[in-house]
Image (cartoon, rainbow, N blue to C red):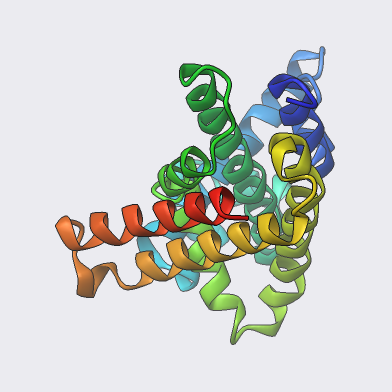
Length: 225
């Protein structure tokens, strides 16, 4: 591969949100504050996944975390400040989950960066709680302008960072960049659509056949390019 997996992962994650790569503050009070902020964001993700975007409020997060409203407002004075932190969190961790899974998979297959492995890793990444939160935000942002002003730029940044790094992860596609981007776009759209159709399709054989068909189609695109 053109770059080592760790190098690619660190570069991509730092581009998405450099603050996540920073070490915890040395001073105890600052460290405690940072850990509390992370706890509140995780609670907010839970509220979002379980109650949808309307359920993501500072009062709900404070209650779930067992902290006072005053403590909550010390970290997030408004709901939209909290929403912004949640957006950053799910964008970052969605990418981290995929990259760690994908590079583990190709190592287990002798280091060959197969498209089908990437599709499988992406499907596993969209089964996570972070992606469920991403999906709730994406749907809500379609009709909520205040949310869209936060979510849409973050989503575009995710796409831009990933697009700029894909050629490093798949060097065998360097002469067929347009097809690689097509494979990525198709897989992302397909998996999101599958999740939205889960109440209709179910989670059994029908969904698995569709997932496998999608992955094989993308692998064949590479083999016949």
